[in-house]
Length: 185
Image (cartoon, rainbow, N blue to C red; front, top):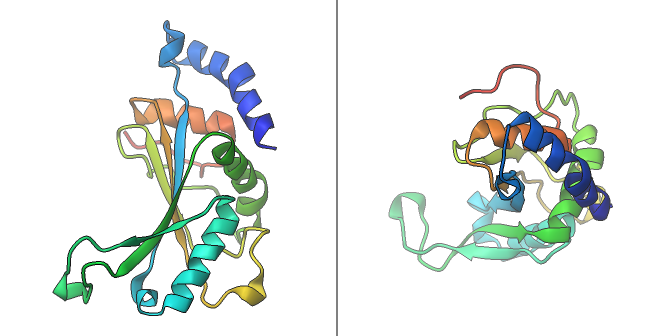
């Protein structure tokens, strides 16, 4: 599956982007760099059993081992101490990235109830796109009975493009379903 999306990018999408964005140098054509999946622990950080379950779930979804991130310094206002787990993340590149995006586009997002597309305002001005999912149950690998607590996740798609317009066009051609409307910026 992942090979199909990568091949589609190399054979079709690159030419379309070069023509539509009027790029002379083929090395400047926007491409996908990485996908980062992250989960903030919140109140679950106190229970290592829940944290381990969340890590296992994200590892299943990503197809690659996820790691727990720890606090760099203590913050009394948030009741966080240095070294305590505060979240989980995994960075996908290469075939794992294309495999995850294929699964996200063709399987997971269509399973979201009342899905009308991803918001267009998730671009950061430098070619990266962020969006959040409310729960992990839309992915086929997740077994409902093994979940201790449902949680959402943030997904960041990092591209090599320099503007939001270029990144939007790249993601649209790859197949990311955006909501109807106008791109900000």
